[in-house]
Image 1 (cartoon, rainbow, N blue to C red):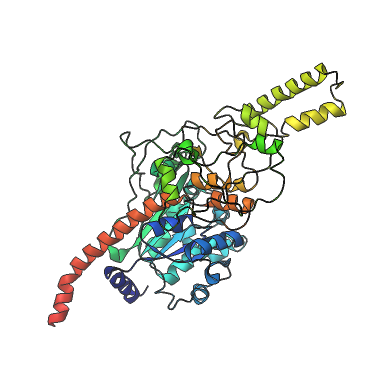
Image 2: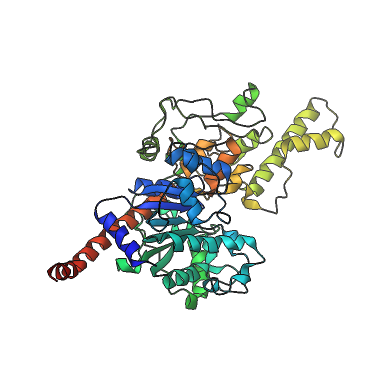
Length: 501
Protein backbone atom coordinates (compact mmCIF):
# COMPACT_ATOMS: atom_id res chain seq x y z
CA UNK A 1 0.00 0.00 0.00
CA UNK A 2 1.34 3.41 -0.94
CA UNK A 3 2.28 5.54 2.08
CA UNK A 4 1.89 8.62 -0.13
CA UNK A 5 -1.78 7.82 -0.74
CA UNK A 6 -2.44 7.37 2.97
CA UNK A 7 -0.58 10.62 3.72
CA UNK A 8 -2.65 12.60 1.20
CA UNK A 9 -5.88 11.20 2.63
CA UNK A 10 -4.81 12.17 6.14
CA UNK A 11 -3.90 15.67 5.00
CA UNK A 12 -7.24 16.05 3.26
CA UNK A 13 -9.17 15.12 6.40
CA UNK A 14 -7.00 17.36 8.59
CA UNK A 15 -7.98 20.25 6.33
CA UNK A 16 -11.65 19.63 7.18
CA UNK A 17 -12.87 17.54 4.26
CA UNK A 18 -15.54 14.93 4.90
CA UNK A 19 -14.41 11.29 4.78
CA UNK A 20 -15.72 9.74 1.55
CA UNK A 21 -17.58 6.43 1.91
CA UNK A 22 -17.95 3.54 -0.51
CA UNK A 23 -20.83 1.25 0.49
CA UNK A 24 -20.45 -2.32 -0.82
CA UNK A 25 -23.49 -4.63 -0.93
CA UNK A 26 -25.26 -1.40 -0.06
CA UNK A 27 -28.90 -2.41 -0.43
CA UNK A 28 -31.13 0.64 -0.30
CA UNK A 29 -28.67 2.38 2.03
CA UNK A 30 -29.14 1.69 5.73
CA UNK A 31 -25.41 1.99 6.47
CA UNK A 32 -25.05 4.90 4.06
CA UNK A 33 -27.83 6.81 5.81
CA UNK A 34 -26.17 6.36 9.19
CA UNK A 35 -22.80 7.50 7.89
CA UNK A 36 -24.32 10.47 6.10
CA UNK A 37 -26.00 11.54 9.35
CA UNK A 38 -22.65 11.27 11.16
CA UNK A 39 -20.95 13.70 8.77
CA UNK A 40 -19.47 11.38 6.13
CA UNK A 41 -19.87 11.90 2.39
CA UNK A 42 -21.52 9.02 0.52
CA UNK A 43 -19.32 8.84 -2.55
CA UNK A 44 -20.64 5.68 -4.14
CA UNK A 45 -22.25 2.30 -3.69
CA UNK A 46 -22.24 -1.17 -5.20
CA UNK A 47 -25.54 -3.07 -5.16
CA UNK A 48 -26.69 -5.95 -7.36
CA UNK A 49 -30.48 -5.66 -6.87
CA UNK A 50 -31.91 -3.13 -9.36
CA UNK A 51 -34.66 -1.74 -7.12
CA UNK A 52 -32.33 -1.39 -4.13
CA UNK A 53 -29.72 0.30 -6.33
CA UNK A 54 -32.33 2.76 -7.58
CA UNK A 55 -33.40 3.48 -4.00
CA UNK A 56 -29.79 4.22 -3.03
CA UNK A 57 -29.30 6.57 -5.96
CA UNK A 58 -32.64 8.25 -5.29
CA UNK A 59 -31.86 9.03 -1.65
CA UNK A 60 -28.16 9.90 -1.81
CA UNK A 61 -27.57 11.24 -5.31
CA UNK A 62 -30.94 12.73 -6.36
CA UNK A 63 -31.58 9.81 -8.67
CA UNK A 64 -28.47 10.40 -10.80
CA UNK A 65 -28.30 7.59 -13.36
CA UNK A 66 -24.64 6.84 -12.69
CA UNK A 67 -25.44 6.20 -9.02
CA UNK A 68 -28.68 4.30 -9.58
CA UNK A 69 -27.51 1.37 -11.71
CA UNK A 70 -27.31 -2.18 -10.40
CA UNK A 71 -23.67 -3.28 -10.21
CA UNK A 72 -22.38 -6.85 -10.11
CA UNK A 73 -19.25 -6.68 -7.97
CA UNK A 74 -17.98 -9.94 -9.47
CA UNK A 75 -17.95 -8.34 -12.94
CA UNK A 76 -16.96 -4.78 -12.05
CA UNK A 77 -13.41 -3.72 -11.23
CA UNK A 78 -12.68 -0.80 -8.92
CA UNK A 79 -11.38 1.11 -11.94
CA UNK A 80 -14.61 0.50 -13.85
CA UNK A 81 -16.63 1.64 -10.84
CA UNK A 82 -14.64 4.88 -10.63
CA UNK A 83 -15.14 5.47 -14.33
CA UNK A 84 -18.90 4.95 -14.00
CA UNK A 85 -19.07 7.39 -11.06
CA UNK A 86 -16.85 9.97 -12.74
CA UNK A 87 -14.07 9.67 -10.16
CA UNK A 88 -10.34 9.98 -10.75
CA UNK A 89 -7.58 7.89 -9.21
CA UNK A 90 -8.89 4.66 -7.72
CA UNK A 91 -6.61 4.76 -4.69
CA UNK A 92 -7.60 8.38 -3.94
CA UNK A 93 -11.38 7.95 -4.44
CA UNK A 94 -12.57 6.85 -0.99
CA UNK A 95 -11.49 7.10 2.64
CA UNK A 96 -13.84 4.52 4.17
CA UNK A 97 -15.22 1.23 2.85
CA UNK A 98 -18.35 -0.18 4.51
CA UNK A 99 -20.75 -3.05 3.95
CA UNK A 100 -20.73 -6.81 4.25
CA UNK A 101 -20.82 -9.69 1.77
CA UNK A 102 -24.01 -11.76 2.01
CA UNK A 103 -23.57 -14.68 4.39
CA UNK A 104 -23.95 -17.14 1.49
CA UNK A 105 -20.49 -16.01 0.46
CA UNK A 106 -19.00 -18.17 3.20
CA UNK A 107 -20.76 -21.40 2.38
CA UNK A 108 -17.73 -23.30 1.07
CA UNK A 109 -14.84 -22.34 3.33
CA UNK A 110 -14.20 -25.81 4.66
CA UNK A 111 -11.20 -26.59 2.45
CA UNK A 112 -9.36 -23.38 3.10
CA UNK A 113 -9.26 -20.70 5.77
CA UNK A 114 -10.43 -17.32 4.54
CA UNK A 115 -7.04 -15.84 5.42
CA UNK A 116 -5.52 -18.17 2.84
CA UNK A 117 -7.75 -16.97 0.02
CA UNK A 118 -5.05 -15.06 -1.83
CA UNK A 119 -2.61 -17.95 -1.56
CA UNK A 120 -5.22 -20.60 -2.36
CA UNK A 121 -7.93 -19.03 -4.56
CA UNK A 122 -8.73 -22.44 -6.08
CA UNK A 123 -10.43 -23.36 -2.80
CA UNK A 124 -13.36 -21.20 -3.87
CA UNK A 125 -13.56 -22.25 -7.51
CA UNK A 126 -16.61 -24.47 -7.01
CA UNK A 127 -18.78 -21.85 -5.35
CA UNK A 128 -19.03 -18.53 -7.23
CA UNK A 129 -20.81 -16.90 -4.29
CA UNK A 130 -17.65 -17.18 -2.24
CA UNK A 131 -16.01 -14.77 -4.66
CA UNK A 132 -18.02 -11.99 -3.01
CA UNK A 133 -15.71 -12.13 -0.02
CA UNK A 134 -12.66 -12.07 -2.26
CA UNK A 135 -14.08 -9.11 -4.17
CA UNK A 136 -14.67 -7.23 -0.93
CA UNK A 137 -10.98 -7.60 -0.06
CA UNK A 138 -9.94 -6.67 -3.59
CA UNK A 139 -11.92 -3.43 -3.29
CA UNK A 140 -10.23 -2.70 0.05
CA UNK A 141 -6.86 -3.28 -1.60
CA UNK A 142 -7.67 -1.03 -4.52
CA UNK A 143 -9.23 1.89 -2.61
CA UNK A 144 -6.81 1.82 0.33
CA UNK A 145 -9.32 3.16 2.88
CA UNK A 146 -8.30 4.62 6.22
CA UNK A 147 -11.14 2.68 7.85
CA UNK A 148 -13.33 -0.35 7.12
CA UNK A 149 -16.70 -1.41 8.53
CA UNK A 150 -18.07 -4.90 7.92
CA UNK A 151 -21.48 -6.21 9.03
CA UNK A 152 -22.97 -9.70 9.07
CA UNK A 153 -25.17 -12.11 10.99
CA UNK A 154 -23.93 -13.46 14.36
CA UNK A 155 -23.67 -16.96 12.91
CA UNK A 156 -20.66 -15.74 10.98
CA UNK A 157 -18.70 -16.35 14.19
CA UNK A 158 -19.08 -20.05 13.58
CA UNK A 159 -19.76 -20.64 9.92
CA UNK A 160 -18.92 -24.19 8.95
CA UNK A 161 -16.58 -24.40 11.95
CA UNK A 162 -14.84 -21.14 11.06
CA UNK A 163 -14.91 -17.79 12.85
CA UNK A 164 -15.17 -15.74 9.68
CA UNK A 165 -14.93 -12.42 11.55
CA UNK A 166 -11.63 -13.48 13.15
CA UNK A 167 -10.25 -14.69 9.85
CA UNK A 168 -11.29 -11.44 8.17
CA UNK A 169 -9.34 -9.56 10.84
CA UNK A 170 -6.28 -11.68 10.12
CA UNK A 171 -6.53 -10.86 6.41
CA UNK A 172 -6.91 -7.13 7.10
CA UNK A 173 -4.09 -7.11 9.64
CA UNK A 174 -1.88 -8.53 6.93
CA UNK A 175 -2.86 -5.56 4.78
CA UNK A 176 -1.87 -2.99 7.41
CA UNK A 177 -4.96 -2.58 9.61
CA UNK A 178 -5.83 -2.84 13.27
CA UNK A 179 -9.09 -4.77 13.66
CA UNK A 180 -11.77 -5.71 16.14
CA UNK A 181 -15.30 -7.07 16.03
CA UNK A 182 -18.24 -7.44 18.36
CA UNK A 183 -21.99 -8.10 18.55
CA UNK A 184 -24.41 -5.19 18.77
CA UNK A 185 -28.17 -5.27 19.23
CA UNK A 186 -30.06 -2.47 17.51
CA UNK A 187 -32.51 -2.07 20.41
CA UNK A 188 -29.67 -0.77 22.60
CA UNK A 189 -29.15 2.10 20.13
CA UNK A 190 -32.62 3.60 19.82
CA UNK A 191 -34.03 1.23 17.18
CA UNK A 192 -37.47 -0.26 18.02
CA UNK A 193 -36.27 -3.70 17.00
CA UNK A 194 -34.26 -6.49 18.64
CA UNK A 195 -31.78 -7.13 15.85
CA UNK A 196 -28.42 -8.72 16.67
CA UNK A 197 -25.53 -8.37 14.21
CA UNK A 198 -21.77 -8.74 14.05
CA UNK A 199 -19.81 -5.56 13.30
CA UNK A 200 -16.12 -5.44 12.43
CA UNK A 201 -14.09 -2.23 12.34
CA UNK A 202 -10.56 -1.78 11.01
CA UNK A 203 -8.27 1.28 10.98
CA UNK A 204 -5.04 1.83 9.10
CA UNK A 205 -1.97 1.25 11.28
CA UNK A 206 -0.81 4.79 10.45
CA UNK A 207 -3.67 6.12 12.58
CA UNK A 208 -2.22 4.32 15.63
CA UNK A 209 -5.67 3.91 17.16
CA UNK A 210 -7.38 0.94 18.74
CA UNK A 211 -10.80 -0.33 17.74
CA UNK A 212 -13.75 0.34 20.02
CA UNK A 213 -17.53 0.45 19.68
CA UNK A 214 -20.22 2.96 20.72
CA UNK A 215 -21.85 2.79 24.13
CA UNK A 216 -25.55 1.90 24.23
CA UNK A 217 -28.13 4.68 24.51
CA UNK A 218 -31.08 2.53 25.60
CA UNK A 219 -31.80 -0.31 28.00
CA UNK A 220 -33.87 -3.48 27.83
CA UNK A 221 -33.75 -7.10 28.90
CA UNK A 222 -33.65 -9.33 25.83
CA UNK A 223 -36.45 -11.93 26.05
CA UNK A 224 -35.45 -15.52 26.86
CA UNK A 225 -35.18 -17.83 23.91
CA UNK A 226 -34.91 -14.97 21.42
CA UNK A 227 -33.59 -16.53 18.24
CA UNK A 228 -30.13 -15.25 17.41
CA UNK A 229 -29.87 -13.54 20.80
CA UNK A 230 -26.60 -12.37 22.25
CA UNK A 231 -26.37 -15.26 24.69
CA UNK A 232 -26.52 -17.85 21.92
CA UNK A 233 -23.94 -16.05 19.80
CA UNK A 234 -21.58 -15.51 22.72
CA UNK A 235 -21.87 -19.15 23.74
CA UNK A 236 -20.78 -20.06 20.22
CA UNK A 237 -17.91 -17.61 20.44
CA UNK A 238 -16.69 -19.05 23.74
CA UNK A 239 -16.49 -22.47 22.11
CA UNK A 240 -14.08 -20.89 19.61
CA UNK A 241 -12.15 -18.91 22.22
CA UNK A 242 -8.78 -19.90 20.83
CA UNK A 243 -9.86 -18.38 17.52
CA UNK A 244 -11.23 -15.06 18.77
CA UNK A 245 -8.20 -12.86 19.48
CA UNK A 246 -9.76 -9.79 17.85
CA UNK A 247 -13.13 -10.12 19.57
CA UNK A 248 -14.19 -7.16 21.73
CA UNK A 249 -16.94 -7.58 24.33
CA UNK A 250 -20.07 -5.55 23.51
CA UNK A 251 -20.28 -2.27 25.43
CA UNK A 252 -22.51 -2.80 28.45
CA UNK A 253 -25.92 -1.15 28.73
CA UNK A 254 -26.94 0.37 32.06
CA UNK A 255 -30.37 0.19 33.67
CA UNK A 256 -30.08 3.95 34.16
CA UNK A 257 -30.43 4.49 30.40
CA UNK A 258 -33.80 5.37 28.80
CA UNK A 259 -35.91 2.31 28.03
CA UNK A 260 -35.78 0.80 24.56
CA UNK A 261 -38.05 2.34 21.93
CA UNK A 262 -41.27 0.35 21.63
CA UNK A 263 -43.48 -0.62 18.72
CA UNK A 264 -46.06 1.93 19.83
CA UNK A 265 -43.39 4.65 20.07
CA UNK A 266 -42.49 3.85 16.47
CA UNK A 267 -45.94 3.42 14.93
CA UNK A 268 -48.53 5.07 17.18
CA UNK A 269 -48.71 8.35 15.25
CA UNK A 270 -49.21 6.80 11.82
CA UNK A 271 -52.71 6.84 10.30
CA UNK A 272 -54.82 3.83 11.28
CA UNK A 273 -55.56 1.29 8.55
CA UNK A 274 -58.56 -0.79 9.61
CA UNK A 275 -58.22 -3.74 7.27
CA UNK A 276 -61.63 -5.31 7.95
CA UNK A 277 -63.42 -2.03 7.25
CA UNK A 278 -61.49 -1.58 4.00
CA UNK A 279 -62.31 -5.13 2.96
CA UNK A 280 -66.03 -4.71 3.70
CA UNK A 281 -66.10 -1.46 1.72
CA UNK A 282 -64.28 -3.01 -1.22
CA UNK A 283 -61.40 -0.57 -0.80
CA UNK A 284 -58.64 -3.17 -0.70
CA UNK A 285 -57.99 -5.84 -3.32
CA UNK A 286 -55.33 -8.11 -4.68
CA UNK A 287 -52.60 -6.50 -6.79
CA UNK A 288 -49.42 -4.47 -6.66
CA UNK A 289 -49.30 -1.63 -4.14
CA UNK A 290 -47.81 1.48 -5.69
CA UNK A 291 -46.61 4.51 -3.79
CA UNK A 292 -48.66 7.18 -5.53
CA UNK A 293 -51.34 8.19 -2.99
CA UNK A 294 -50.24 10.53 -0.18
CA UNK A 295 -51.74 10.04 3.28
CA UNK A 296 -51.61 12.80 5.90
CA UNK A 297 -50.55 12.02 9.46
CA UNK A 298 -53.63 13.44 11.13
CA UNK A 299 -53.61 14.43 14.82
CA UNK A 300 -52.44 11.24 16.49
CA UNK A 301 -50.05 11.50 19.45
CA UNK A 302 -46.41 11.78 18.39
CA UNK A 303 -43.52 10.22 20.35
CA UNK A 304 -39.98 11.57 20.42
CA UNK A 305 -38.98 8.70 18.14
CA UNK A 306 -41.74 9.51 15.65
CA UNK A 307 -40.64 13.16 15.62
CA UNK A 308 -37.13 11.99 14.87
CA UNK A 309 -38.36 9.93 11.94
CA UNK A 310 -40.42 12.83 10.60
CA UNK A 311 -37.62 15.39 10.90
CA UNK A 312 -34.41 13.51 9.97
CA UNK A 313 -32.15 16.18 8.42
CA UNK A 314 -32.06 15.79 4.65
CA UNK A 315 -34.83 13.18 4.69
CA UNK A 316 -37.74 15.05 6.24
CA UNK A 317 -41.30 13.84 5.78
CA UNK A 318 -42.89 15.22 2.60
CA UNK A 319 -45.41 18.02 3.09
CA UNK A 320 -48.08 16.18 1.12
CA UNK A 321 -47.86 13.13 3.41
CA UNK A 322 -46.47 9.60 3.23
CA UNK A 323 -47.19 7.50 0.13
CA UNK A 324 -45.99 4.04 1.19
CA UNK A 325 -48.36 3.40 4.12
CA UNK A 326 -49.85 0.41 2.27
CA UNK A 327 -50.67 -3.13 3.43
CA UNK A 328 -51.09 -6.63 2.09
CA UNK A 329 -54.36 -8.09 0.89
CA UNK A 330 -54.94 -11.02 3.28
CA UNK A 331 -58.76 -11.38 3.47
CA UNK A 332 -58.77 -14.81 5.11
CA UNK A 333 -56.64 -13.64 8.01
CA UNK A 334 -57.86 -10.20 9.13
CA UNK A 335 -60.39 -11.64 11.62
CA UNK A 336 -57.74 -14.06 12.88
CA UNK A 337 -55.29 -11.20 13.43
CA UNK A 338 -57.93 -9.47 15.55
CA UNK A 339 -58.34 -12.59 17.72
CA UNK A 340 -54.62 -13.08 18.36
CA UNK A 341 -53.04 -11.86 21.58
CA UNK A 342 -49.79 -9.87 21.72
CA UNK A 343 -46.85 -12.27 21.45
CA UNK A 344 -48.92 -15.04 19.84
CA UNK A 345 -47.08 -17.05 17.22
CA UNK A 346 -48.43 -19.48 14.66
CA UNK A 347 -49.35 -22.33 17.03
CA UNK A 348 -51.56 -19.93 19.01
CA UNK A 349 -52.94 -18.42 15.80
CA UNK A 350 -53.85 -21.91 14.60
CA UNK A 351 -55.79 -22.59 17.81
CA UNK A 352 -57.69 -19.32 17.35
CA UNK A 353 -58.41 -20.21 13.72
CA UNK A 354 -59.81 -23.64 14.60
CA UNK A 355 -62.05 -22.03 17.24
CA UNK A 356 -63.29 -19.52 14.65
CA UNK A 357 -64.04 -22.35 12.22
CA UNK A 358 -66.02 -24.23 14.85
CA UNK A 359 -68.01 -21.10 15.68
CA UNK A 360 -68.86 -20.48 12.02
CA UNK A 361 -69.71 -24.14 11.46
CA UNK A 362 -72.07 -24.14 14.45
CA UNK A 363 -73.70 -20.90 13.29
CA UNK A 364 -74.22 -22.30 9.78
CA UNK A 365 -75.77 -25.49 11.10
CA UNK A 366 -78.00 -23.45 13.44
CA UNK A 367 -79.34 -21.66 10.34
CA UNK A 368 -80.25 -25.02 8.88
CA UNK A 369 -77.29 -25.48 6.55
CA UNK A 370 -76.35 -29.13 6.19
CA UNK A 371 -72.57 -29.30 6.32
CA UNK A 372 -71.50 -32.89 7.05
CA UNK A 373 -67.93 -33.38 8.24
CA UNK A 374 -65.69 -34.14 5.27
CA UNK A 375 -68.11 -32.71 2.73
CA UNK A 376 -67.08 -30.17 0.07
CA UNK A 377 -68.86 -27.40 2.02
CA UNK A 378 -67.06 -28.43 5.22
CA UNK A 379 -63.67 -28.32 3.49
CA UNK A 380 -64.43 -25.00 1.81
CA UNK A 381 -65.41 -23.42 5.14
CA UNK A 382 -62.26 -24.79 6.78
CA UNK A 383 -60.04 -23.40 4.04
CA UNK A 384 -61.74 -20.00 4.25
CA UNK A 385 -60.84 -19.68 7.93
CA UNK A 386 -57.85 -21.88 8.87
CA UNK A 387 -54.40 -21.23 7.33
CA UNK A 388 -52.91 -24.27 5.60
CA UNK A 389 -49.65 -24.41 7.57
CA UNK A 390 -48.56 -27.17 9.92
CA UNK A 391 -48.73 -25.76 13.47
CA UNK A 392 -45.81 -27.97 14.55
CA UNK A 393 -43.42 -26.42 12.04
CA UNK A 394 -41.98 -22.89 11.71
CA UNK A 395 -43.72 -21.47 14.80
CA UNK A 396 -41.98 -18.11 14.31
CA UNK A 397 -43.54 -17.65 10.88
CA UNK A 398 -46.33 -15.65 12.55
CA UNK A 399 -46.08 -13.23 15.47
CA UNK A 400 -48.32 -10.48 16.79
CA UNK A 401 -46.20 -7.61 18.06
CA UNK A 402 -46.21 -6.38 21.64
CA UNK A 403 -47.25 -2.74 21.91
CA UNK A 404 -44.79 -1.92 24.72
CA UNK A 405 -41.64 -3.70 23.47
CA UNK A 406 -39.27 -3.42 20.54
CA UNK A 407 -40.26 -5.83 17.78
CA UNK A 408 -38.40 -8.96 16.73
CA UNK A 409 -35.96 -8.92 13.83
CA UNK A 410 -37.32 -7.76 10.48
CA UNK A 411 -36.19 -10.09 7.69
CA UNK A 412 -36.07 -9.87 3.91
CA UNK A 413 -38.91 -12.40 4.00
CA UNK A 414 -41.17 -9.41 4.66
CA UNK A 415 -41.15 -9.18 0.86
CA UNK A 416 -43.19 -12.40 0.72
CA UNK A 417 -45.88 -12.23 3.40
CA UNK A 418 -45.24 -10.09 6.51
CA UNK A 419 -46.85 -12.52 8.98
CA UNK A 420 -43.80 -12.16 11.24
CA UNK A 421 -44.98 -8.65 12.17
CA UNK A 422 -48.72 -8.49 12.79
CA UNK A 423 -49.84 -5.09 14.09
CA UNK A 424 -50.37 -4.90 17.85
CA UNK A 425 -53.65 -2.97 17.37
CA UNK A 426 -56.36 -5.62 17.09
CA UNK A 427 -58.80 -3.06 15.69
CA UNK A 428 -56.54 -2.59 12.68
CA UNK A 429 -56.12 -6.40 12.39
CA UNK A 430 -53.40 -6.59 9.74
CA UNK A 431 -49.71 -7.01 9.02
CA UNK A 432 -47.52 -3.91 9.03
CA UNK A 433 -47.37 -1.44 6.16
CA UNK A 434 -44.25 -0.56 4.20
CA UNK A 435 -43.86 2.72 6.09
CA UNK A 436 -44.33 0.93 9.41
CA UNK A 437 -41.60 -1.56 8.49
CA UNK A 438 -39.37 1.39 7.60
CA UNK A 439 -40.13 3.02 10.98
CA UNK A 440 -39.27 -0.20 12.83
CA UNK A 441 -35.97 -0.34 10.94
CA UNK A 442 -35.39 3.39 11.75
CA UNK A 443 -35.64 4.70 8.18
CA UNK A 444 -36.95 8.29 8.26
CA UNK A 445 -40.27 9.17 6.70
CA UNK A 446 -38.60 11.09 3.88
CA UNK A 447 -36.59 8.06 2.74
CA UNK A 448 -37.99 6.75 -0.54
CA UNK A 449 -38.08 3.14 -1.70
CA UNK A 450 -37.97 2.32 -5.39
CA UNK A 451 -40.48 -0.15 -6.80
CA UNK A 452 -43.75 -1.46 -5.39
CA UNK A 453 -44.65 -2.98 -2.02
CA UNK A 454 -42.88 -6.34 -2.19
CA UNK A 455 -39.48 -4.99 -3.34
CA UNK A 456 -39.71 -2.24 -0.72
CA UNK A 457 -40.36 -4.74 2.09
CA UNK A 458 -37.36 -6.78 0.93
CA UNK A 459 -35.10 -3.73 0.87
CA UNK A 460 -36.16 -2.75 4.38
CA UNK A 461 -35.72 -6.25 5.80
CA UNK A 462 -32.24 -6.57 4.31
CA UNK A 463 -31.00 -3.22 5.60
CA UNK A 464 -28.81 -2.31 8.55
CA UNK A 465 -30.90 -0.06 10.84
CA UNK A 466 -29.80 3.52 10.06
CA UNK A 467 -29.84 4.61 13.73
CA UNK A 468 -27.48 1.77 14.65
CA UNK A 469 -25.31 2.64 11.65
CA UNK A 470 -25.32 6.28 12.79
CA UNK A 471 -24.16 5.31 16.29
CA UNK A 472 -21.26 3.32 14.83
CA UNK A 473 -20.43 5.99 12.25
CA UNK A 474 -20.45 8.76 14.86
CA UNK A 475 -18.08 6.72 17.02
CA UNK A 476 -15.82 6.07 14.02
CA UNK A 477 -15.82 9.77 13.11
CA UNK A 478 -14.76 10.67 16.65
CA UNK A 479 -12.05 8.00 16.55
CA UNK A 480 -10.74 9.26 13.22
CA UNK A 481 -10.68 12.87 14.37
CA UNK A 482 -8.89 11.99 17.61
CA UNK A 483 -6.37 9.86 15.74
CA UNK A 484 -5.71 12.67 13.26
CA UNK A 485 -4.99 15.11 16.10
CA UNK A 486 -2.64 12.68 17.82
CA UNK A 487 -0.83 11.92 14.59
CA UNK A 488 -0.53 15.60 13.71
CA UNK A 489 1.03 16.31 17.12
CA UNK A 490 3.41 13.37 16.74
CA UNK A 491 4.45 14.55 13.29
CA UNK A 492 5.26 18.13 14.43
CA UNK A 493 8.91 17.45 15.44
CA UNK A 494 9.50 15.57 12.21
CA UNK A 495 8.11 18.43 10.11
CA UNK A 496 10.10 20.98 12.10
CA UNK A 497 13.32 19.01 11.61
CA UNK A 498 12.64 18.73 7.92
CA UNK A 499 12.07 22.49 7.67
CA UNK A 500 15.41 23.25 9.43
CA UNK A 501 17.36 20.90 7.25
